Length: 292
Length: 289
Ligand code: SF4
Ligand code: SF4
Ligand code: SF4
Ligand code: SF4
Image: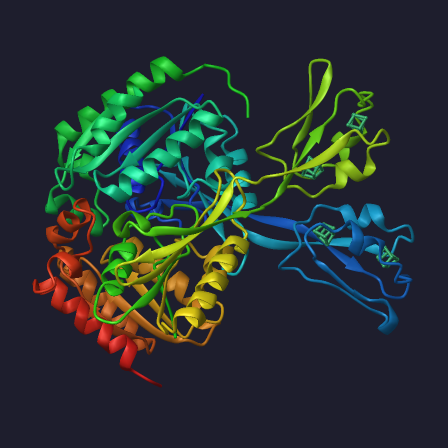
């Protein structure tokens, strides 16, 4: 199996546009493909398919529960908690866990010598699976609103792929921080989608530098070509980063996308170009064993 | 007055609109809270006054001269960051959450925590006021702490310079950094676009914004790309009691200006879009509850 992550420094450069179209083309060419929406804060890939819900898994985190009958307010748990998630006032005999700050690391339970701490699961979000033509092939990571970090839900969704496909397309979260890294670290290859503007250029550089640090091979698709300038192409040339495809800006494409339609359905030359890009990636980077 | 410009989804044109707001008449303090992909400064060539190191999370590191390979730490780590590799125990820098537990329980005291000191906060002046922004080092967890630091700096500058209007360009998403960007602001401007995902994301971020009880505005950007979707969004806003501050057409001039390192209101103040943005801004800053 090969996992290809589709990412962009900032959201909105067309990452979901590329991910959904690649997935669609792979299905049409009889690949056992799977689409995994890892943009758990704002998952959107599903809007492009008429898919059937087939399963739902809660993603939880353990949160400590302190039994104040047993607790002697020694404060060791508070000391062990590196996230300031335990609030304690020994004189007043008050101790509280602040769920929003807790990372579920379990350090407090280890710290407590009096067995005053047990744990309960709390929901962080869901991983849902969907089928198209009776084959399970879409996974969506969705973080609950108000939860601090999407990382656990993303990891759970990626785990769920479980070799059920030959090619998994990961729609990665924006940025270059933790959620992005956790997603791309599991991939064999990363397609960065950018646009030829100063913002696109600056975000792309940051993404490329990040991927270099973790030794991930990547290539770039320039979306909305013709709108800005040549700085991105020049940069790619200088850095010897493969330019996989350029998609000319057309107002119709944006309109089509806004209506939840896939360009690869109506534009066969686009579909073919994209398929060639992906086929090359699969040939070159498939089966290469990788580490997380 | 602090005005947060947010969008839920990236790429709706939030930053270009923030930049346009920042280059109208009054002086402003522009605060780029998208510390994960700060790029507003690219348009303003600020004179760099200050650079402050932000110390983010720490990562566990094994000192192999002390480690006896007892493997005790592996079972304690809840983030699957510690594993066996051939003849030794290794910690993945990517997976480590920095909880310090392994370091506390290691019988040989072989694990120490190493701070990441690569993140920065910058501030400086630009033609129309002050600008503050942060840059989180790659892979770092975006806990919102750097966002808080950036906002504190903006408030301090506001006091020092007497510039009252603070524009916050928020990060995408609905997680921690967004919450940090919204806390304590007076107004939230949500920039959306007429796509299915635009509406979905608007609904999702609204749930979050509602908790803060702010004045809320929506701007529908690139509204002419899908008129029927734009009306749907407008209708939804009306039903939910949110003021639509304005609709902006798709305009190549915005990108043209961007490429020249300028905002649309700087380069083409008299264009249709430029005038519209001016009108929207006046609506947002004037309206009082
Ligand atoms: S589980 Fe970890 S983060 Fe949560 S309260 Fe305990 S020590 Fe703190
Ligand atoms: S370590 Fe245990 S006994 Fe001590 S304060 Fe925490 S819960 Fe109470
Ligand atoms: S617990 Fe300490 S000594 Fe044992 S394997 Fe881990 S680092 Fe090495
Ligand atoms: S600090 Fe915590 S997360 Fe990091 S390796 Fe140690 S136990 Fe795991």
